[in-house]
Figure 1 (tube, rainbow, N blue to C red):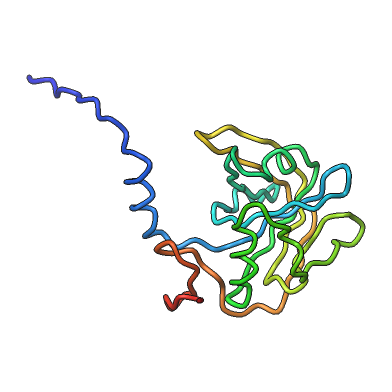
Figure 2: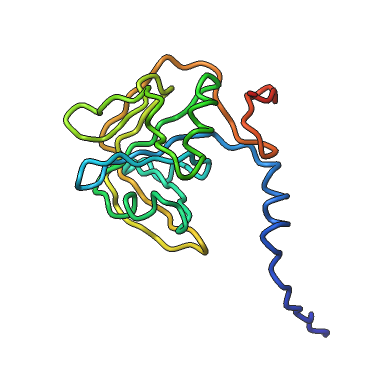
Length: 173
């Protein structure tokens, strides 16, 4: 009887991983919160997924290097805004650094809170921070859903092949 030999494989590098992941279409969202001083924070995220139905939980990946990281990982609540094709310009704005991402407008305050919500988001999820879990160079923000809003719907905005696209694959320039 022969025993199979095990080989140790080295993990792939970041560039190879990024290239392969470009083939995975992901819905685009804008994650928002407000800090204890009332300052609004937000960023464009594609690493968002449902985790559990009982209780309802969402997971958001945020880079530790993000300017929003301290605010989002310490805020008691945050909002996940699900984007449509009409939000491509807003998604680009929230993906940039060093600017006032809220300057172009389109946001209102979630009733009963100080949290910014995209007024015409396809859907929005008000979450209570349940946990923050370290994962490589990111943290995973686990949110328990408190309330939802459903907007007008329409064609979703996706991140695919390093571009904002619609489900039919058209770039949203």
